[in-house]
Structure formats: C-alpha cells, structure tokens
Amino acid sequence: MSTPITPLLSEQEIRARVTALAAEIAPHLQPGTVIVALLKGAFVFAADLLRELSRHVPEINLDFMVLSSYGNDTRSSGRVMIKLDCQQLVENQDVLLLDDILDSGNTLTFAMEHMRLKGALRVYSCVLLDKPSRRQTPFSADFVGFTIPDLFVVGYGIDYAERYRELPYIGYLAD
Ligand code: IMP
Ligand code: MG
Image (cartoon, rainbow, N blue to C red):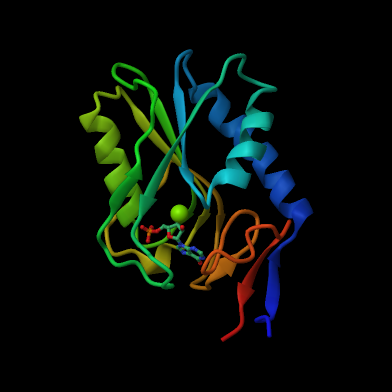
C-alpha cells in the first residue's frame, strides 16, 4: 500500500517561485559561471531553473555531481561521499551549486569545499527548500526557494527510497 502524501507546495507555487528565483540569481552570474546541480534530487529544479535563467543570461554552463550521505534512510549519516564528480573544469570560474533541500547542511558544506579545492573563484549555493531547524553544520544558502518546517518531503525530483520523484508538486509523508 502506498503512503499518503499531504500536499505542501503546489505546481503553481513552485513555478512562480522558480521564476522569481531566476530573476534574483541572474545578476550574479558572470560569463563562464558553471552551474553544478546535485543529482538526483535537484534534477527537476535544475531543469526548470535553467530554462528560467535562460531568459536573463545568454550562455549557461551546466554540470552535475552525485553525492551521497543518506542511503535509503530519512536521516543524514553525516558522511558525504562523491559518487560522480562534475566533469567541467571549474578552476578560476564562478560556480553556482544547486540542491533540492538544505537539511543538516553536510552535503552543501562538503560540495562548497570541494569546489574551492578544485580552484573555483566564487562558489554560490541555491536550494529549492531550506529546513533551518535541522542543521548539524552551520550553513546558509545564498538563494533559497522556500523555507519549510521539519517535514520529510517528496515530489518535484525529491524521493523517499527512490519513490515519488515524478510528482509535479511537493508534499510530505504522513507519520
Ligand atoms: P543535508 O546534507 O542533510 O543538508 O542533506 C541534503 C540532502 O538530503 C538533500 O539533497 C536531499 O537529497 C536529502 N534530504 C533532506 N531532507 C529530505 C527530505 O525531506 N526528503 C527527501 N530528501 C531529503
Ligand atoms: Mg540530494
């Protein structure tokens, strides 16, 4: 039997916020900025944000990275591993990291440091959802879509044990 999903953010709310977020971010993107989206969770957000950014910025350089710290659990293990590194050279370039959710802060803290070690100039971070109450590592993202309470959310690319990524809205799993 499938777990009931309680709606939290509708398709329309997400679309309007992603459009506004692109307008906020665009003035910070220099030519050559590399956008690095963290897979798999950020893939839908990245696709929508990129198309919105293309209304403001002519050439967008996109890459992906796969990091893992969760396994199939709902809590961060605190240990971040690189499963797939980005392929583009980021040395002397600005980088904009995109993630679906900022939760414990471990993933983005690791990813920011990783980009700096690769020689990136400035590293910005952007998350669709921020759960500030769950931080284990102090971290604030430069750009945030929505700040949400401590709920385990799914949909719009975000999964629970690889399910629900296909939902066009974001909802949370009832206990
Ligand atoms: P952090 O390292 O704890 O900040 O983890 C961020 C990552 O954990 C996100 O990219 C998600 O993949 C995953 N995550 C955190 N909260 C949730 C949630 O509510 N639903 C699904 N995945 C989550
Ligand atoms: Mg993730």
